[in-house]
Length: 298
Image (tube, rainbow, N blue to C red; front, side, top):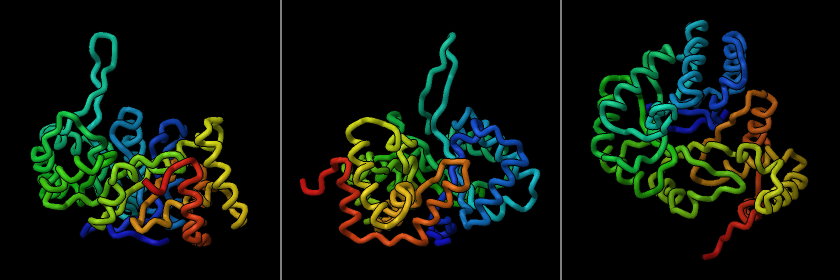
């Protein structure tokens, strides 16, 4: 499995296994251990979660697996996130962001406790916070690194302006931006975020690389056009459409790390095949880039 250098202290597997829907998988702890081991045996050793996923339940289940399989935690790289919270106000749950110093420090310690591990490899600010003090957030992240609670820090879903604001306050220490990119989502190309990452030699993690499966089932014109384009190239290579999507994502020089969110190992194998077996031509990449209607020339 190809690896990607993330900051000064980490190397991630080029493909990442995500655990956003872990609580829905209805895995026993034994099932989860076996699944994690199967991922690692394939070279996929980077695991992604967040405290907000199923209201902390995903972290708890992963922690139970690490506890029952001593030594396995040290064989993988663990990513989790903070910044999104819920509060019960009267009878309703209200969602909000909090990237204040005390909240970040407390959240990190709580995640480590739930995950039953001594440290987190990569700690991310989950989303942009409109009430955001980059210097205060940076102070918290720096202190977590100094205390040895996290090895590297980054963000998720940031636009280039907020990314630069926090990265300046962090003295250039942000190591990734976990962003959405798939055949029908080009937000971070259009915002300039992808160019920003290339310029700074920062490799993004990619969530929802298959658009949550929407492109395979939606009758939305954008999805239909994308599927037609990807099917054409998939037929040309004799591969599954899913494999071609992953190959397209990993062709770009930004060296993106797509996150597979499925609990089916055969789906992960399709992504691995994209990395090891498929060689797209440059014109094919552009054919796929424009399949859903995305413009090249402005």
